[in-house]
Length: 282
Image (cartoon, one colour):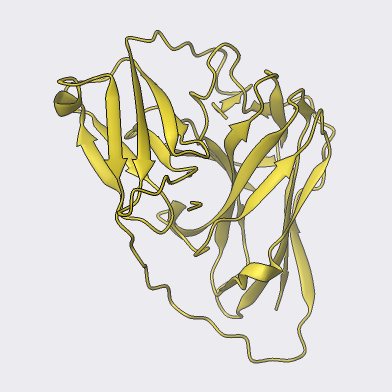
């Protein structure tokens, strides 16, 4: 079943190094013991995080974790599972997690007009010296599940049918990388619940540096609100250590978001934007 960089921005971080105090390995499955791929595993509100592979397996490095901290395992379509760190250290080498299916009811929005116009919002500028870094050298898989996003102001008076999203890769030396596109409702100015009811994936091949274009029409996403769209890094080839997205500073009237770690809290920056663009019909 298919199922949220270390993000270093040049304006906010200079370095971040994991001193691995403990490594946890495990597997995420459903109620029928079927492996769940691309589940998010991490310490809640901290940068330690990763994503399960195609076999549902994962390896998570833990450091600077308090005894009362919580490790959360989550995946779209499943109920999240929380494990207290103080309970985990009794058997620190293995963490097998079983997630239960969960169906969330979203408010249905319908477009009735047959005369729709196409609009586009975002930033198409790609030539910039600033960047947000996905890949963290020498820490394989420990920054998978990190996200970078942007707010798109669609308004709340007319329903919008989302048709295409694209983002730009500035630097990349991996043979292959895979992303998940997440579309969030907004609560208190930050991402809250996901609006998309199924996973949206995008991939890039060897040394690819260009626009990654994602067709959203098959997913039938209709909203009547502003949204935040994010790019989540979930997989990479064995060889490679560079994966960057450009970031535009200043970018007036734009709002930039990042999440450092699979279960970390979101950070928000005004007047900044990654090179992202959303096309929709109204």
